[in-house]
Length: 390
Image 1 (cartoon, rainbow, N blue to C red):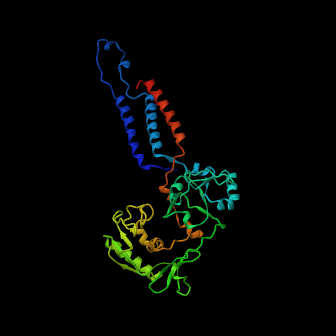
Image 2 (cartoon, one colour):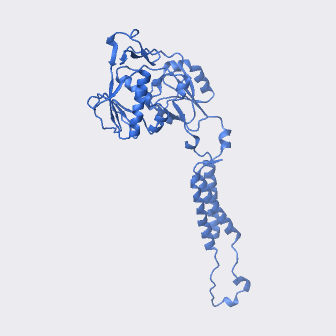
Image 3 (cartoon, rainbow, N blue to C red):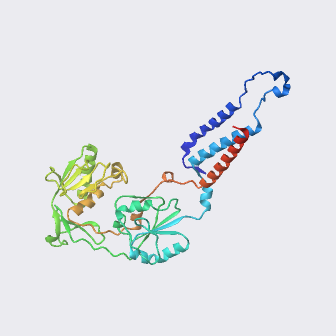
C-alpha cells in the first residue's frame, strides 16, 4: 500500500473539531430552581453524569467521516490490486509504410491479445491492420506524443525505421524503458559528396553511414565539391569565465580529432558566435550558439547547447558531449548536409530516459470504494444527529 500525497496527512488534526464540539455539547448543565422543584422525585432531578451511548456512536461516525475525507485527499494505492489485473502493454508505431509492413504480424498478434496499438503521431491515432492512415507526424514533437500515451504502463514497445531523424533533438522521457523494434528494410541514405578543406591539406567528409572522417587529397573529389576551407573564425560573447574555458576546450578537441582550425576574431569577421544572450545576435549569416541554457530560440542559425528540459549546461560538460553538440550544426553550416544516420539498438535506447516511479503521477484505484464509504458514513452521521437532535 502506498500514499500518493502523504503530506496531506496533517489534515488528520481536524478530528479534534468534531471531538471538541461533542464534548462541548455534553458538558454538565446549570441547575435552575423553579416553584415545583421540591415536588420532583430525587432521582428525576439528578443530572446524568455520562453521555448517552448513541452520542458516542455519533462522535465515532463524525471522526470516521473526517478520516475518510482525508484518506480520499491523500490517495490510496494498493499494490495488490495493481498486480492482480492484466499487465498493461502498449505498442507505438512510427508512421512509416515499411515499418508497418515488416511488423504487421507482431502488431496483429498484439491486437488479438487485447493490447493497445497506436500511431506515434498527433493525437495518437489507433492502428488498423494493413492500413497506414495519413497522420500528422513531426519528429520534433516526439515528447508531446509520448506524453499522450496511457498512464501506468507495464511494458512499452516501439516500432521505428531506426534513423536518427525519427526522434528529433534531445532526450525523450518515458514512463517505462521501451522495447525497440527497428526495421531492417529501411532505405540506406546516400552519402554527401561535399567536403570541408582543412589547413593540413586533408579534407573532411561523410561516408555512407553518415560518419565524419578525414579524407586524403588523393582520395578527395575535385575542388568544385569543396564546401569550405581554411580557419573558422569565432567570437565569444560569454560573461562566465568557466563557460568560456569549456568552449575553448571543446574547440581544441575538435581541432585535435578532426583537424578543424579555429581562430578567435571580432564579431563582424566571425562566422561562429557563442553567446549567453538569446536575442543578442541578429545576424542570420552567422552560426549562433546559445550558451545560457535558460532560454531557447527557434530562429534560423541559432542553436541551444543546453536546455533545462533535456540537459543543463553542467551535465552537458560532465558527460563530455559539448564538442559533439558544436560539431553537428557546424559542419552543416560549413556546407555539408549531414545524411540521415541509421542508429543501432543501443544508440536508440540512449535517447530515452525512464521517469522515476516517484515522479510519475499515479491515480488512486480505491476512489470508488472511498466515495461509497463516505456516503454511507455521512448518512449514518445524519441519522444519529437527527435522533440526538444535535
